[in-house]
Length: 291
Ligand code: NAP
Image (cartoon, rainbow, N blue to C red; front, side, top):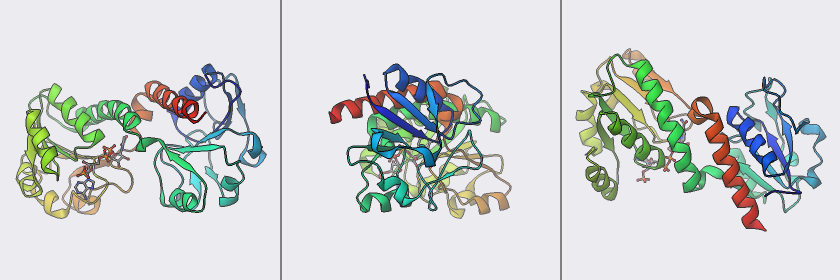
């Protein structure tokens, strides 16, 4: 339980609505900035502005999964314009206050170097693995919508075999796709082989690309290079799940007439309730462990 704790939610998407409901169920007091245009009634949530926060009383702050951009802006799906926060705003919380973000960004890295403690939720394997489930469901949805073949029997090339890549590969295998996975470590290639998917090195990726119906990138580095795109059939759909700016040379794909999509925050889109519950569960565990 979070009885007596004061939570401040700053921006976020639909999963944060469920997160707030769950925090109320854990008996926390919940303050929210950036939900002015939410259609759902947020009974029990206290709506405030960033200027009105009493920093000394807040026990934990939850920033959006995407964190804070270079200029201090946070993503607000339910308020326009979005919120801009300053270094001073962050440093005004007490030393005991926990600040959660989804992922670290250069702005947050710089803040944490100047002594503001920040906890990146997606650095935790448990949450990243839970989160990979709605992400894979979203990838299936987009794969169905943007290809003209069944996923059953389709050639699906997955790049990366981390928390998201593993779930994506397994989910598409379950649908009967022929799944090839590019990974750079020998251990990952062995594990991919063990799961009956086809392990591919970078050189083999060029070959696998030539028959791909769907290419799904999970690597947050430029890996879907012009060299790879050159090999793809023009009917292939490239779905980039990696955090911004993604790992695809979008310019060259467009030049070749290949459809691409950078699709961030799929859990918030396809399963905000489940994703919000997972977030609340992990935040509650972390706060209780701190005590
Ligand atoms: P992860 O567990 O850290 O996996 C990243 C994978 O990328 C690993 O297999 C890693 O290989 C590989 N990799 C990293 N740099 C590489 C490089 N230069 N060359 C080749 N491979 C490289 O991360 P994750 O949790 O799977 O998340 C993957 C990405 O998806 C992140 O950007 C995350 O923010 C994003 N994401 C998006 C959504 C969405 O809705 N779109 C949802 C969840 C996560 P090694 O193990 O060899 O380093």
